[in-house]
Every structure is written in structure tokens, then in C-alpha cells.
Image 1 (spheres, rainbow, N blue to C red):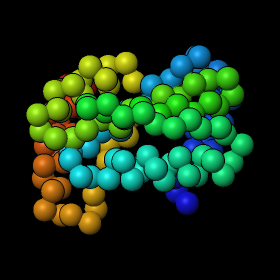
Image 2 (image 1 turned 120 degrees about the vertical axis):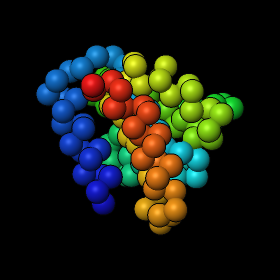
Image 3 (image 1 turned 30 degrees about the horizontal axis):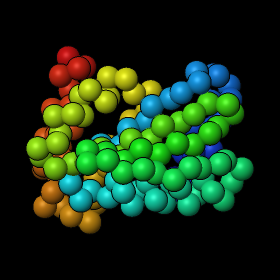
Image 4 (image 1 turned 90 degrees about the vertical axis):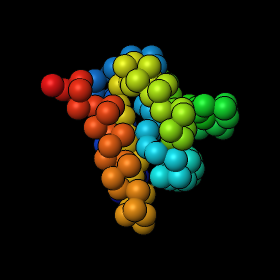
Length: 127
């Protein structure tokens, strides 16, 4: 139940910080890394608690979900990971308040691809 603990921790931070009315939280990762499964698991966990969730709506490039926490709307972006669609990632993480990069631990053959994409996205920003 690591994800439930993360959600509870994040909820406490929102209560303490009162961030803003809308918070953007994109999911990144190469294709078939498990972003959609993580999103579905998150929705299931959030429905068990006092949080209300709305259904995700699909788009060709991403799926969007909304969760209300303490009068703050969390917007979760499930960004598709196919190589031709990764160019849109930068425009999404520039406005992000929290980011999740998903790696499929059951597919070691894809670790290098995941590492390479993570480096392209983040390390140039930190240098």
C-alpha cells in the first residue's frame, strides 16, 4: 500500500501548504511502462478514502483525471510514452507541481530506454 501512503502524505502537505486551486501532476514513462495501470490503481485507492474522484477522459496524446482534495483540484496527466509523442512531455512538466516517472520493473530490457528518456527530460534542467 505504498501508493496509499504517498496519497495520504500528499494530502497532508496540501492541507498544510494550501498550494492553490489547481495542481498539475503528470505521469511520464516510456510506452507500456504501466502508467495507465498506476492511474487505475490510484483511482481505486482514492475511492476507498474520503476523496472524490472523477472518471478519466481519454485523448490521443494523454488521459486526464481529476481528484478533489481540500478544495484543491489535482489534475493527473497520463502522458503516452511512444517515441513520437515524447516531444510533448516538456510542455507538460514545465507547469507541473509534482511528477511521477514510471518504470516497469518487470521488463529489465527497457531500463536503458527509460533511463535515457529520464535523462533527456530532467538532467538538462538541473545543470
